[in-house]
Length: 120
Image 1: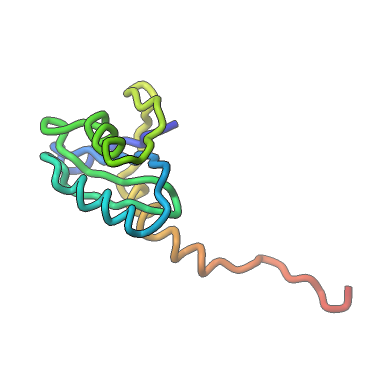
Image 2: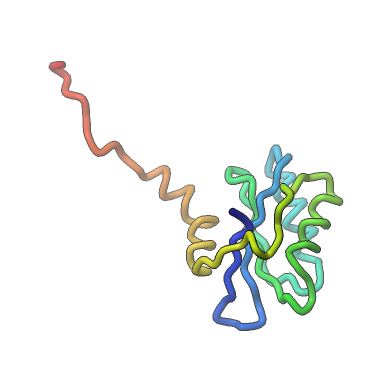
């Protein structure tokens, strides 16, 4: 089920989505982003409070999903167990970024496809 992992066009980087429980505000988001960004090998960090998840790009020669999980848990957040490689599935990198960067704005533009008639 998770994390979602994909090898990018840059063969040295891996993109991953990691669920994070326990975030309650944007301060939590900034704290995780700022701290994880400082880890060796981490190239990109985007944490979404509304999704209770983080999107990370990293060099697997310098760090791992397990190291990211441990670091986030050491900060006081919960990363659900079961992050073994056999539970990962590949998705296009563009899908990861679209989910983290575009979904909230796309959702606000959604309109109902039908309207109830005023006469009924």
